[in-house]
Structures are given as C-alpha cells and as structure tokens.
Image (tube, rainbow, N blue to C red; front, side, top):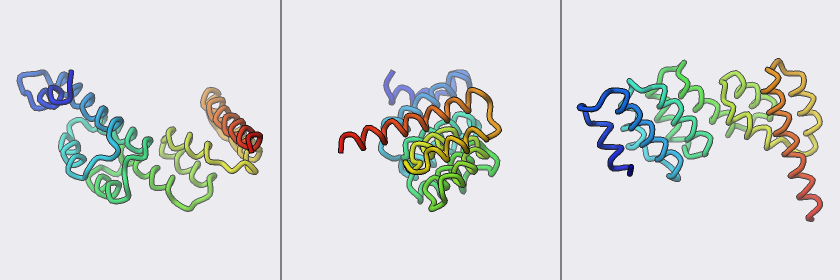
Length: 169
C-alpha cells in the first residue's frame, strides 16, 4: 500500500476507528523513518489527531531517535502536547541529549523520562577515558537484569569501536 492510499484511509470515515488508526500509524511512521525532517505543517497535521496520542508518542520517539527534529520543531510540538504524555517526555529527552550537560546527567534525565533510545545514544557517546567509570556507574544502577545487560553491552560496543579506531590510526 502506498502513502497516498494510507493517507486516504486515515480520513475515510467508512473504515473502523481501528483501521483508520492503523493507517495513521503506518503513514506517519513511514514519514518519520523515510524523511530527513518533517515540517511544522506536517507535524501540526499529525498532532491534529489527538485521539491517537499513543501512536503519536511512538512516532515522536522515532523522530527523536532519528534526530529528525530541530529546536524549532521540538518547541512547536511540545507546545501542543500534554506535559505528562509519552511524546512530551521523548522531546524533553531529546533536548537533554543536545544540552551541554555531562553524560551522567543526561543519562539520569533519559532514565527518568524512560527514553531508551536516548540512553543508547548517551552511552555510545561516553568518552573513551570514562568508559570504565561508565561501566561501574551502570552496574550500580537500580535496573532490571536485562536492561543492565543491554546498557553494559552498549558500553562494550563503544569500547570495541574506540579500540578499533585506535588500532587503525
């Protein structure tokens, strides 16, 4: 199914609400993953479907993870969302990610906001000289076993990348 068909299904009131919601999600997730950036007009159109706030949250998360929102987009979207919504929290995590805070502070905010995509980016950006400290930091966190393993694995991959780049120099 192409994007035009999906967009038509979103507005087709003859379809069930569930079918329309699925078309909405598929249309916007495709736009979020295949576009460099969405305009404020496109974001406004997406946000006009407030009855589908859960899919909107997931789409916003994809946009954040893909770094497809600029500062103006972030403010524009945040001003149209509820403060406690998942989408609002993802945008807040993106703001922290781009802030001048140290990685531990960014990590704490991302963890609080439940933004795993941001945690992954933060751990991948830990400076080589701080990787051992980062491993100890993560090991001391109150996390589930699988979450801790996942985060330590990211640090191991970061270390391996750093070692590979040192060896190729």
